[in-house]
Amino acid sequence: MAMAMANTLSSPTTPYSSRKTIPLYSSPFLSLTLKPPNSFLSLSSHRIRFKPNRKTTLIIAKSNDSDSIDGPDRLISAVCYFYPFFDGIQYGKYVITQFSFLQTLIQPLVPAIRVFKSFPFNGFLVFLTLYFIVVRNPNFSRYVRFNTMQAIVLDVLLIFPDLLERTFNPKDGVGLDLLMSLDSTVFLFLLVSLIYGSSSCFLGQVPRLPIVADAADRQVM
Image (cartoon, rainbow, N blue to C red; front, side):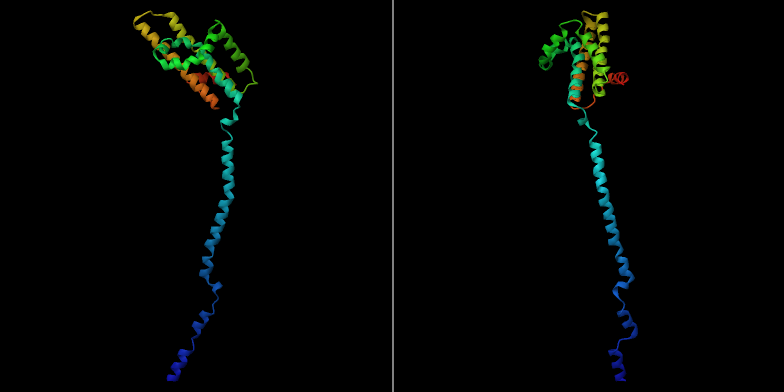
């Protein structure tokens, strides 16, 4: 009996020996564990493939910026906004005397204003020049023609405060206070339009003044 037990312990059973000879590569578990690395590699390859397309899209979007507007177009457009300001400088006779910083701001423009005001029909001649030579000239870009037309419309609107001042022309009292407020408001609006319009043109942007921009759009094809 001792011999039989020794033989049993020394010799492995058949089921154990059959499991020991199973090759590792035939295990279904190992074959499943190989799939995640393959899928990860395929996913990373897709990511690498789409990166150049994203960069190309960003480059196309950046090409449509203010750099497409030429320097001469910016300069011509910016200068046009001085026309309504010079034509309506008389509306600042009250507010300029009250604030010294406005006198300092306008002082460099005094020689040009004097030349503009030296002849009574200078404003009308400048109007005809800008409208027929610039706005109606297709050789200029639409950017130049739009800003020029916007400056012209802004100057045309000065007819309304001029008519009010000529019609009432109060000498004192509440009427004079209202006239001073009206003239100061018109002047400040012209000053803000000059600063905003000219600086935007120098930066290559499109300034859109309230009320004026819509009228300019309808005139420029």
